[in-house]
Image (cartoon, rainbow, N blue to C red; front, side):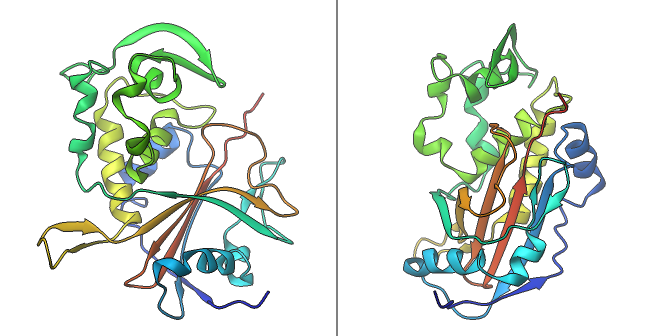
Length: 253
């Protein structure tokens, strides 16, 4: 199939990701190993109805595949080959404030002080759920799960928050919500672009966000199934930038 878009790598700074504070936290949460973050510029304008073609061409580009690697069973990052199909899900990217997480206190998922509310340990999808926060994130039958209904859980901001809270297989969790929120703010700022809506005069996110669920390729997108796994493609249609953010969790046992 002929491609429409071509891609060129950008030496992006990613000030949030590369700050000493965030690097330290990602290491503590075991999200530093197996993570890939790359940004590219594409060569021509793209309208929303062309998004499928843009993402298809993105994963067909030799320039992209050379840099957007995935984690193999041997814990080494490997190049995807013979990619035939992209399974994706469009995410919402409407949130511009951390007020989105105020309801965590309102629902008593965390204390007014920001500290976690602990509970009896329970194993869910390979995670030890020991507080109400992770109960809300993982347990669909929990009374706290509905604090964030389906539409809110489809927000890119929620996805980032969830991945930081779950961490990797050797994650050292926080006792307070603040480190997660501080990090979410910096990463979200790196990943999305905002602009003022001329009609409403309000600041809005202009980026398009997609969760990549699977790639029909010779190499699997993720070596094992885990809620910690993620692969996102985020498009800035104004700057013609496309960002690839990936992490795969591979337990040590």
